[in-house]
Image (tube, rainbow, N blue to C red; front, side, top):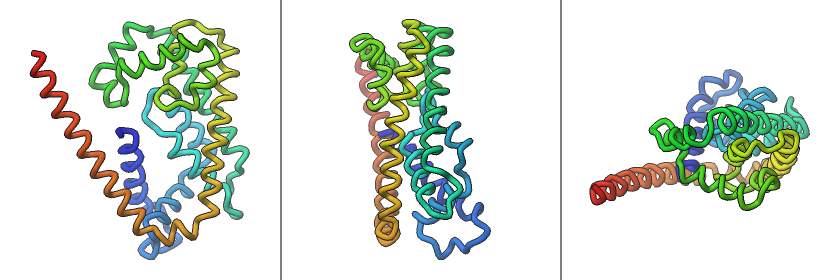
Length: 242
């Protein structure tokens, strides 16, 4: 739910920035979906794709679903400066960079005790980390071994954390890099294909833009409500234990 809330927040702010970024067309005539699309067109390139996917593959809460499909959507346009193959390639390179940072900096250098402590800190929670999530990724790695760094790229929560237990165990880095690159590449192909399919339905998306905007707003409100309720329930539970 937190990840969904972050997606809606980014889309919301992308829409706000679209008016400032777009100087060639009157945005008052554009739907909210078109404004988001124009914001992406003005800001997405191979460099930003690499950086965002590196962040997604590390501990920063940047959903890959918010990077690759829109980039592929834009690359599908005839007038686009982006090439679909390079969108996938640079997205995968970014994923490998982020996973490598996790592997060396968090897994091997920082180590298990300090990382678990950080994950359960306030800063860690802001980054959507927790000891429970780390434990889930570590258990998955311990059960499945080296291949988990490949298969784990397709599993939510595990996907961006699986490189950390690989660092804990000092897994052979070239093997880790190959599994990560191939796994991330296949995942990015799936996301890019979704963006390509969405481009084929652009007319339908724009036609129902108002309904989609309302749904986005409702999702945002529900997400805020969920986090508030969860916060109070957690406080109530802690009081009982104390």
